Length: 95
Image (spheres, rainbow, N blue to C red):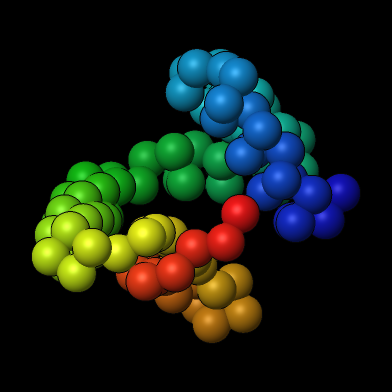
């Protein structure tokens, strides 16, 4: 399965399963694909700093969006650019 298929699948699962169920499933999958040692190394990564920075960026973006009466706010990451990510504030939104 390609990375994009996994990302689509995770997006669906986030709406239907608990974080713990998702963590267990993908830890097992990654252990099978890359080995238990690699899976454990990834599991041991402390994401607190990332989480705090993401929360701060979201709060700042929400404030800017509110100040400008923006129609939408979305988050995007770029796998081809070292997973760089951004919040985008949009004045218009089309469904």
